[in-house]
Amino acid sequence: MTTQNIADRSSVARLSEVLTGLSWPVSKQELTGVAAELGWSEARSTSRSARYRTGYIESPERVSNASASVKDESVTEIQVKLSGADARGAVDVAGARRQLGAELAEILGEGSARQGSDIAWDLDNGGRLWLKSLDTSVALIALQPAYAEIERREERTGISPDRVPGEAI
Image (cartoon, rainbow, N blue to C red; front, side, top):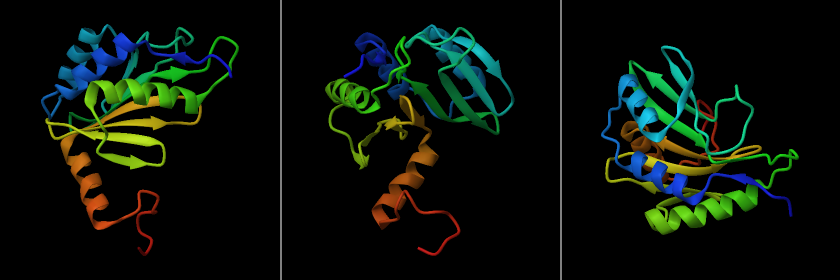
């Protein structure tokens, strides 16, 4: 088994505290304050997105490991990578997901939804947090309430998350 570049427990706890405490809608300007509160530095910003360096995992100086999508000046999604390749370039995404999932379950309780090994928590603020395995990393993704409600409705009606929009169900 290879070592994994994983965010430490205190960073995961603080991040989850901040994300569960957001008051939606979150403006792009408010996101800048949230990023500063978390100690992130801005890497790039456009009218439709923002990218940050969090310091949670080791990465090249110019590489961002958090991003936010923006629509009509409101944040729709925040994605934060909590694991990545170690110094040798080795990755153990499944191991990182298990470790981070266990830590978040201690903090947030049992998840309310699953897609494969990915876990979601429905939040009191109406949003939703996902712990998702990506190609070479694990990310914590916060969805604004409107997007989270679409997912919850689809789950209640049995629509597969793997479906392709526009194709017959």
